Length: 429
Image (cartoon, rainbow, N blue to C red; front, side):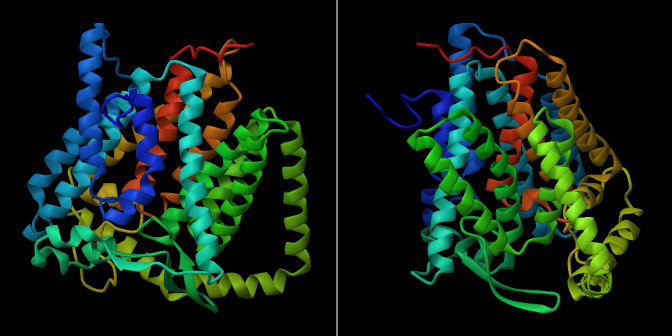
């Protein structure tokens, strides 16, 4: 009997978590429910492991995330604005959630079929978002409502701006870019357009990998349509940091992968960009000047400087959470994953987080050296996604959106799986 999350396998459970994101979004638990879901799945994982007498293995990245959680917990002792304790609990629970996800994935995934299921789950999730995003962008319909979970949250908590963003649901958000007024930017099931764009940029390489596996089937046609819609949605997000991540990830893929056609294409694209830059240098210079002097970037530079100055007061374990500071439109410890961790968990937390990133990249290099692994070609596409998340984190807090952070850690976990496990190939008939 099929009962989701009860009679299904752990891999199917995780696939359902991502595929059912639209349902979580409609209910309003898309930003709240993940720690509870993953806690339940981890309990289920422990029961299965105990029944089968299978040891729970930790890899360097999952070991570092456990250490990071201890440091994160320790930083909570230094919170000065008491009303931010709830924010601290929320952020800490999200990192616990992705840590549990990583442990489950790295101990459970053993077959090529299971890897493909997870890749398809991410593809289906962004396909649903992309289709609805196109409909909304074309004006065919609009979605605006307050999530039902609002009535379960105390009124004094609902008044917080961040809580209002999580509870008020719409697909497009008014925003501005330098020199151009944007009446709407797509965000679909995500808190902000930048997080949606980053997720699209990370999953697009996965769509390309799946395209390379399926020839002349309905799956290939679906993937072609899904990829086109994802690119269109990405453009409609108008997310500069996600674009930088996408370009950086693509260039890394182009110059490190085994796909010669991609390398030739990359060389052509770079030469074309250089040529256009030479021909239109004056125009590009004026555009760049406008971007660099826009309020958003100026505010962020002020924020980063103020964050560093305030961090110096508690350099080791930070302040635990963001804090309001003078002369800054944004709170200290925001608008950058790395500055946020430095400010909130101190230099100790940042070093451990960088060790997590370094260990993930080490796993990437390790897979590339292995010649006898099934799905070895997948690592190039996952590394592309890894670079997107790494670059996007420079100017965006990746943990601000819970869905986005879980997508990141699912991709990182699959990198670990390819490195640490011998994946059983699909049976050939």
